[in-house]
Length: 178
Image (cartoon, rainbow, N blue to C red; front, side, top):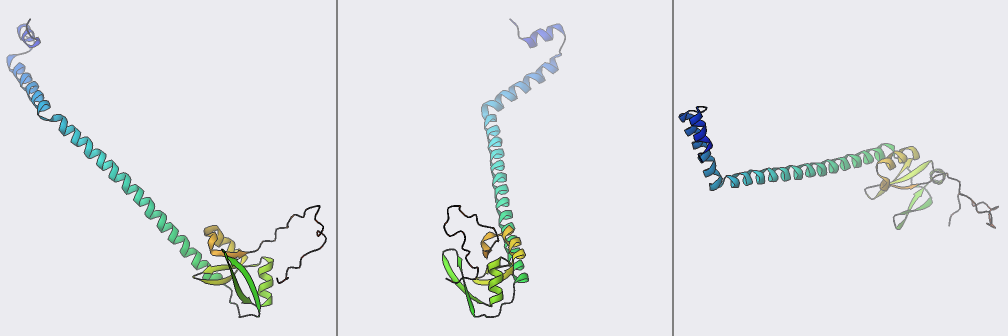
């Protein structure tokens, strides 16, 4: 049986010059596949994978840098809010104790500042190992950004009293010093 090419030549559909050109192209393709054409495709695929991995690492690194920059910006806002809103406190004669984490700290205030702290009109914020007195409104703004900066902010929430409590009729004075 004759090849398809021979049959097309006999029928006159394809001329001899065109048939030889097609045969040469087929031989080139066959040699290319044998010599390592597939290796070239594998190398291209590997290069694509490497580029995809590098771009993914780059995006992750950019996200990390953005998060760090955002954290620094928030911390700068907190410092600015504390410095702008701090109340100048004269050294008072009343010691006010509060907790900072697991430690009990003591600052000396005037009686008026202590009463405002107890009633929740003022708050205590920590700035570089120092404690500053702030209005409660500013403290709430700071807490929206960073809750760890505010050490003490009293709220006037009413505490529910148990019905069986024998001391329910006795109120604890707000200025009681332990």
